[in-house]
Image 1 (spheres, helix red, strand yellow):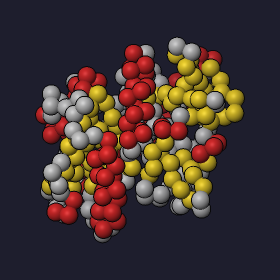
Image 2 (spheres, helix red, strand yellow):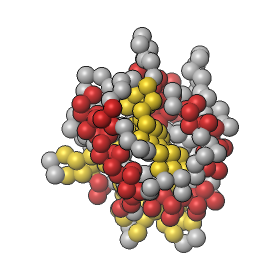
Image 3 (cartoon, one colour):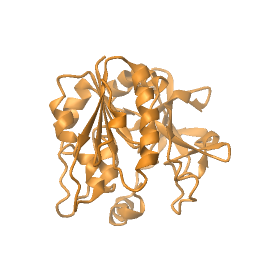
Image 4 (cartoon, helix red, strand yellow):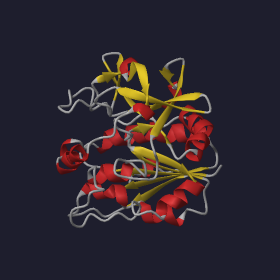
Length: 282
């Protein structure tokens, strides 16, 4: 497979830390395949990162909100839609591994065939323990497909990156969520500016997928679904909303409920979540 990886990396006062992260991330991607091209979208050029298959794309962010950097890669990615078989977008602190990629290859088809998104879980380390980065409550539901059990992540499917094969990516570029407009009030903008880009096509208020699924083996989430969040800023900061507070072994309830038995969310509750969506942002 020919793989295109696009990484957003804003370089401010902490740019030295970001460079360290990027070196680790690039090394991991290069292990996955020799047919991989990595594009780093940034506001400050650092030649130390460039190599044969790593290219820096400089964007002028003077007098602009740096969060919009996450959207500036999209015109270039879209132009590449016929050149690659797999497309990955990521923030610059997501350590994607070869095992993560093989996990995606193994389960993406069964999920897509049934209109589901294959999920990942970001994790962080704190005091020798591992925590979920993005979940503020436990996963409570499961779904069976061809006798395979999947946990249903209806809590928060955000993981600061997305990955799609060529066919799915082209469909994504043709959707209203690709060239997204922020003008006026928009019920689809459940996330912040940066997060709305990094969620891809599987966020809340998007209708492409029924659910985000994570395969389970012996009542445990597939170990290759976990992705390390290098910044560790949620678990270490005692986040007020609760991000980074659930231990890895407690991500799912001990006894999951069939998703088909889940009660539909009342319309008034959906309205309240929209009205106060800033409190739910990542």
